[in-house]
Image 1 (tube, rainbow, N blue to C red):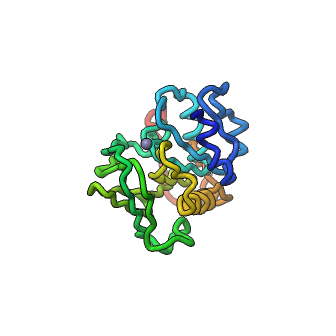
Image 2 (image 1 turned 45 degrees about the horizontal axis):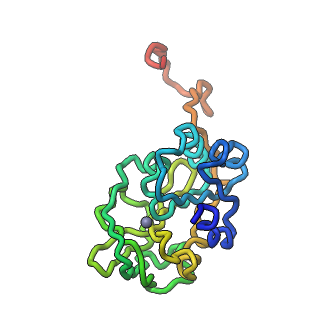
Length: 227
Ligand code: ZN
């Protein structure tokens, strides 16, 4: 199945357009990203084919406030690893087993309208240890029929941007047609969406003129501030 058809249920959920690795600039031009409030990232293979300059561009956009939802095997994408700063490895098994996702943060906006837990009849298993930094907010923990558990719904803030990782999404099962999964993704899009917030700069400006007078006399050793 090509990437466009696989993405169909997500497009129906309102997340368009759908760049693929075949597009010039890999679909992620400065213009596209500037017009994007939330970028959803799914990929199972070919993470290495995403150009480093594109990863840098997306990274900067997240720091500046663009929301990012990383789904399923996107855990091994360059952008997710860069944002996390850890290896992002995990255990896995494809055996069409049952998954039960427990909500462990019922007041969280991403859990809005969902039950205490929901189930997927057939999934690929992802198991701990998931090599990520401690999530700022943990929303779902998965239990698998084969015995493993996994932190399946995790949020972080990076710069001014919000990142949501959501585990389910193996393409040989109809995961993205499941109403609970679609609810989580719709809630997630709203939660990580770009917002005005407070001023933010990626630079490190030298504020020579203070906002109010400073009494001390001090001579600056400029040699310490050269890069
Ligand atoms: Zn998979």
